[in-house]
Image 1 (cartoon, helix red, strand yellow):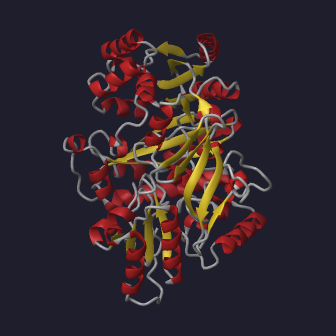
Image 2 (cartoon, rainbow, N blue to C red):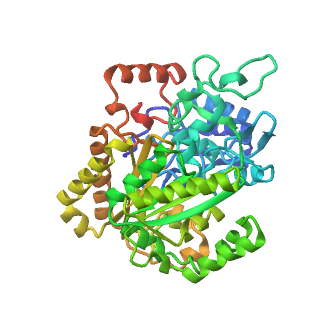
Image 3 (cartoon, rainbow, N blue to C red):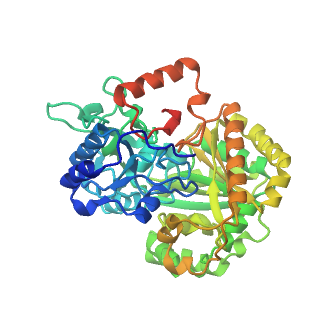
Length: 534
C-alpha cells in the first residue's frame, strides 16, 4: 500500500488544528512526526504517516472531530488498539486525520436482567471481560488473543474470532445495537436503540439490520463510538483436551466434526512447525504468572493447584514428538453436560486417528486469555505476520493441497529470503473453518513492536537489519495467497486494504456497496481504500 500525495487542500493546517484543539484539548492533538509514524504503522505496513492524530474523549467529540476534518477536505481514519496487519487503519493518503479512539474507554451499563452490556468503543476486551466476570456473565464472543490492547470498536470494524467463537461465531454476531459517527458529524443509532421513545439497546433487527452496514467494514462506513453486546451466563464448568494427529487432513476432519456438533467453545490446532515455534517462547513451565492464573482459574483451589502442577511437570515435553496438535475447551452449565461433550470429542478424535496428550496449552490459554502481545515478533525477534482464510468444511482438504502447491511453486523465493511458516487452524460456529498461515523472517522492527511488547521480553530479542527484500517477498506471498483464496470462493475477517474484497464481489453487489458508501460518506473521506472503496 503506497499512500497518495495530499490533494490541493492547502498547506496551512493551523485553523483546523485550532478547531480540533478546541474540541479535544491541546494535549490530545498530536503533530509530532515520530508519534504520527507510530500511530500510522501496523504490524506489517509502514506507510507515510497521517498528518494529524487526534484523541477524542467522548462520542460527541468524535463526531465533532470528524465533521471538522471532513469539512477541511481531510481524510479521517479510526484507530483502536493498533493490532491490524492488513493496513486496516494505515492511511492511504498523507492528508489524513487519525482518530485515536482509546479514550472512549467507559463501560456504561451492565444489564444482567435484559442481558446486554453497553460500552464506549475504546474499551479493551480484557477490560470488558474482567468487568463482566465479577457479574458471572460474558459476551458470547469475548475477545481475541490481543485483547489486552484490542478495542471493542476495532474488533467490530475488523471482525474477529477466537474466545467463544467455536460456539458463538464471530465478534459481530454478539452485537445488538451501535452508535455511529458519520462523515458529516451526525451520530446515528441502530436497532431497538434508534427510538426517542424509551430507548433500550436490547435488540438488533428491528426492520433492516442497519448495524450490519458498519460491522466488518474496517472503518470504511463510519466511526463506532458506542455498542451494546449480548451477554450469556458464564458456564459453570470448563474442561480441556489436547490431541495429536498424524497429518493435517485427520486433524481438520476431526475439527470440522466437532464444529458441526457444536461441542467446544474453542477448538484450534497447530501444524508441527508452528507448535515448535510456540514452544520456543519462554514460559510454558517457567511462566509463574501464567501458572498463578491457572491456580486462580480452577473451580477449587485444590483443583487449580493440581492443574498448575501438571503443567509445571509436563513443561514443554507435552509437545515432544507431537505432529498436528488440536486443542479444545469444552464448557457446560454443569459437570454432566461438559463431561458428555468431552466424551464425544474423544470419540471423534479416535475416529480420525488422534491420540490424547497433556492439555497444558488450552489450560494456559483460558487461564490467561489476554496475555501480553509478545508474539508480535518471533521467539528470536524475527518479524511475524499472518494471513488467513475462512471456508466451509467441505473445501478444507482441497484448499490445504492448493496452499501446498502454492508454496512448492515459490520454494526458491521462500528459501532465499529465509521465510519460515506454519499453520494455525480454528473452527467458527458450526459452519466454517479458518486456516491462518503464519510467517517469520529476519527483518528490523517497527516502533509498534518496541512499544507494545513487554520491555523485559523485548530486551532478550535479536535485532535484525532492515530487510526490504524479504519484506517485499512477504508482500508478494500474501498478495498471491489472497488472490488464491478469492478464486477459491473463500472469505476473510480483517479485510482492511489487503484482501481484494471489492474485486471479488459480483458487479451488482459492488454497485450496491458503492452506493452505500456514497450515502454515508459522499466525499469518500472515511478511511479511503478500506474494502477497496475509494
